[in-house]
Image 1 (cartoon, rainbow, N blue to C red):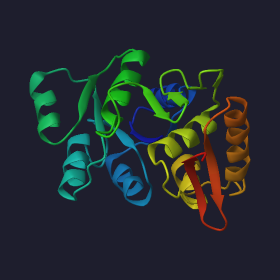
Image 2: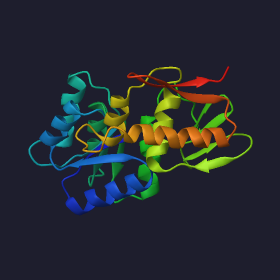
Image 3: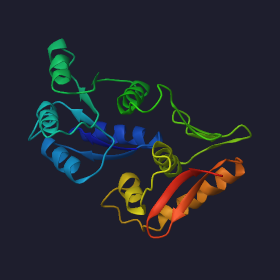
Image 4: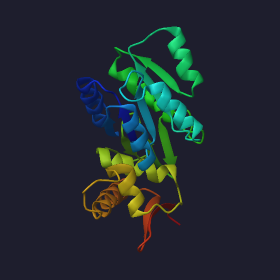
Length: 224
């Protein structure tokens, strides 16, 4: 899952990015409102964390422009202000949630999970297909016989596959969503991680498989 963080305080931005990456999120950081809009327009993100007080364009203005353009990306407002009027303003502008500084890392992560939970996902942290379960809170991939704790990129790829069962996901889409549009990483890395996941599924005696379609991409399907 990829997030954009727009926070102008460099030390806090670095700390938040470190927290996110430690918890298997891919995170890009920008430091003003105009940059936030530019990055959101040119990249595919699952959510955005917006500081209110930023140079060039404040968080409320960024949020209003996003919603006016029909962009429904989940937004968490992050600010030092705790006044009720500011919270109401952010929520009325289309924010999904509001977090006041200082905050605990656990609360930040919980609010991100809540705001990015789609309507199609059950109100739990688990994703299932066949006899396989992916726990998004513990990053464990399990079956009735065993379990593995996935590394960050493995987790994100498996999450994307389980969110789109039986749908073809191109190699380019994996690259954009997980490594980033501007990444210099070789595209063959996708195949490497698919191989890792296949080995883990085999070890779990999974009744689902990752099927490759030549020059097209990958699908997660049940074994018949």
